[in-house]
Length: 471
Image 1 (cartoon, rainbow, N blue to C red):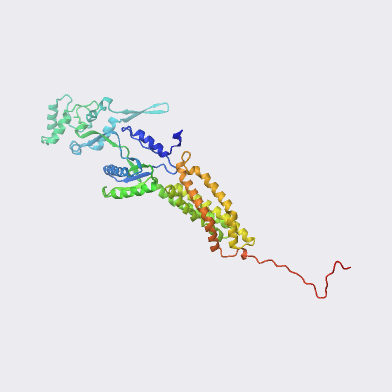
Image 2 (cartoon, rainbow, N blue to C red):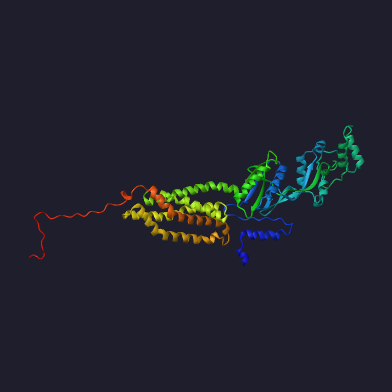
């Protein structure tokens, strides 16, 4: 099947092209990675003002959409489901002697219900809720008509007409004329029909709509808090670009955007980029530890500190090959590349170990330093090339991205292949030169052992050899 050989980027592009034919759909692509569950790019915005948070997130999202290689740009402040917002008029509440918290509790009890008791059935407890009937809270107008006062209004007779209620209200004020806005509010309250869930008889009902505006709006889909501070996150995926170059471009855009956002708003780049920077510190420590352990092992085997030091020169040679291979293949430096470098630190020394060890053996047999190096290079060339070739050929399928999830492992294979190949070629030339320069001491005390001497004893004067033919 041809689709089985498609890369991850090709599959995402094909699905995105198909879904874009339906503009009413909202979609995003996400995938778990080897070291993180975060999206590649996450811009974190911190502020205590929700309106500033929403507006700044929109500005950041607009800037990210302009950057090539970023897809599926989303903000955590996107509008969610429709909500009913109750906006209180504090002046009216103050004139009527009501408080916001008091009304909020009444609304909560009437709409969501208040636990009056609990019904126990065997080992289960069922809460009994007391709330307004369905017909009293099914529409926005029903919400506006809910009675929110519980006995602090003007007492009247339920059978009184509206005009009599107003007259009773005016007389209860001690003859003080009411202000125009106050009279409008209370006339409206008195003329409002009382709901079944209203206060007791003899109390003028006050509707919610007379002291608050009830509107339908779309609130934020979520309100995040990061480190105990209100925050918004603008996330995006990568397509066709590496994280390092995109992060640098994002930092430039955010730096230009700081002039347009409020002073109390803070913006930072997070996501996998933040985790990548944190992981580099631990990986550097791991690389240094790997090099140190390799040196200790070789020092114990060679029983020398000079020869392992010479062999360790292959590590920087391998790093040169890594840079060269990444440049040729267009591979970005990431965590997998760093892991490949750590692996390479333990592999590239093998060829130099084979070469130096055989040269030391030849010197023990009596050859000079230079003769031993030349002969070691000739004899060990074939084993070195065979070892390198088998390793490189074994990594080719991984480097080509064959198999599921190979895109994640391919940078590590490219790193090991490039570093090992380049280091092998330089090892045969560079390491003998370093050996000649550094190792000034004669192995085992002398470079060339003295020729062995044979003692002969001369016959004493007057002595004669016996002739076997003589009798």
